Length: 212
Image 1 (tube, rainbow, N blue to C red):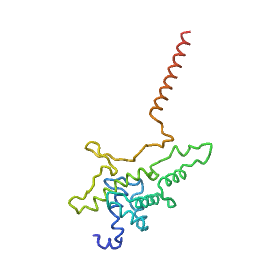
Image 2 (cartoon, rainbow, N blue to C red):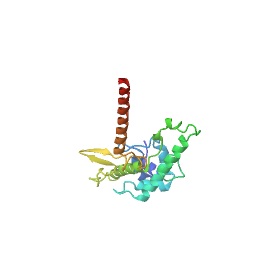
Image 3 (cartoon, rainbow, N blue to C red):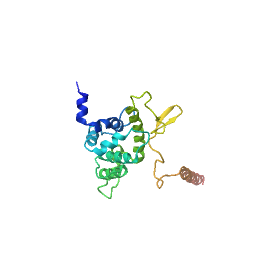
Image 4 (cartoon, rainbow, N blue to C red):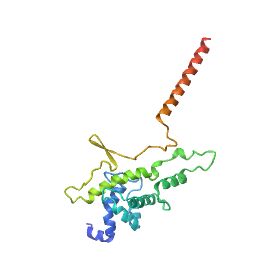
């Protein structure tokens, strides 16, 4: 038998207060986990850093995410992925990508790219923002579970969107590629039409040569 009261004293009040939010952040029935990070390592990082403990403990306090809390949690995610000198997940992604997949030879720049696994990289900021919205909602419900109506706000607009009568996960907001590399649908259609015209022209020329 585990003495919960004794365990709570050993963990201290700040860590106990942060546990619901920590569980929602690192993966539960309603939110995704950080791939291959489990619970132990993220918990040890949170437990040994009072800034992280305090920030994670504030998640789920209201329906609005505090920007300062989000910034600290973002730095915490960088720590979880082993990048302790950066506080921006986008920078951490780039750092890890270069570390893991930078070419050893200029003559073969894509050699390591062929075996790359983006799942090993931390979430980008836009994906992390939606994840925090989802876990903030879940943590809010848990923290107010003693109330007859614990949900003062619904999941719609908090990492999910309502599609008819079903909730769909919003993975990120905005375009799925940077504007400087995104291909407009109209440009793609024109490119396909040009290729089709070129193929037809080549085919007609071959037919004319056969007739001759």
